[in-house]
Image (cartoon, rainbow over all chains, first blue to last red):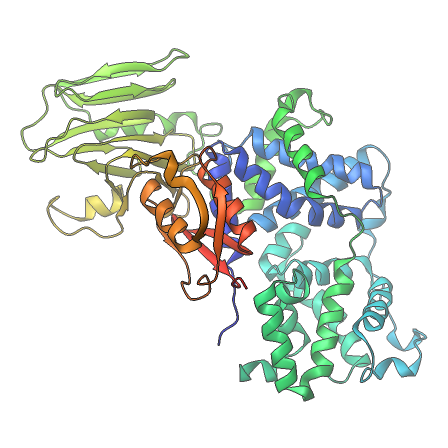
Length: 192
Length: 358
């Protein structure tokens, strides 16, 4: 039996069209579905919940007020993530909450220098919680842009071109960033 | 599902069914994956790792409740126009330009940048004698009665052209902007509404057409009767109207279609506030231990919208409720809540997913 799958992007597009036609219901649905994930994403740039909440709200306000002029994006999710990213970065710089560190050149990481205990590789009897903690630690050690690419590709399930648009880099750079990040995981867990 | 055996971390993390289990605890997929793990114990390691990987990325720093999100929605709806909002320093045009960039589809004839192109097409289509043109420069909807008794409510900033009188085989009007049509039924003389990108054919019915020249989308919303919508391109490729036409969309009441101009694609959906198309006594919506499939069938009849469900999954679901005043979507929300189901709207149909009742 094939497990149940919903084509979420299709539903998003339907909601978007209804929103454009002035449906407050559709707006409410999209807010319920995306507000939390968008706020979490924004917090990765500026760790201030209130500030990011305002930014996300502002993005929705702009979508609502400009709804008749907007076209239907190919991916509503990617469109919203991209709008929030722009808004948070722009407002962050403007209000001087954010310094220029996001444009730092990616550090080259020497994985062998990371002091991770060798028993990390043993996952056989581990529970998922412990494993999650370890991966979180590993992710924290990644350069910011690698972490963001991993987040967008695997958590937000976006494709390469969508990520390239959001991060304003070329698609090949997206692939390179993903590959260098995955290399780390492969190095630590043979099963991957 | 043996192909899952060869999956790597990346594949699991991106698999929709896997994600619904890990991130949304969706019951059907949860059950599937638990069973799959029992059947494939050797894959346990990598499944656990992939699961932990997604959970690590989740990092729920914030988690606003449904109630808080409702109040946020209210605030969004009531926000003053953008000029007075919190971040007022961005020029509107700059924002518009960035939206274009993100969406990644052509700006086309957006009137901001090409003010001359936008107004040409309607004139180009019908530059014939014997055509009347009426424009609505006011702020209010204007009523126009055509010679066949049909009425047109012309919205502001819209205009319409039509031959006076209509030709004998066909009634044709050309619209730019938005209008609501109530068409007198004449089976032998179909009524056509042409806009730049789409054409709508009807026999006798009422519906809205919206096709502003600067918009990237044209839309048709049906109130009563049935209409067919075609792209202009397809129509022009077909020499006579009677020939079979491709790419048409048939709409019935409570349905609408949006035509995305840059993508050249129709998207059919349900109107925002569906109304009853069949008069149904309110008492029909008093349910007492009623099998839920009967409720769905009643909704289907009342609103003329298909409800698709798995009869077997719902066979033990019963409802006791009064659903006389709620809108269609509120009714559906309530029914789904009671029966542990969810629904989605796909291609203007309601699809109910249920894990059954005990």
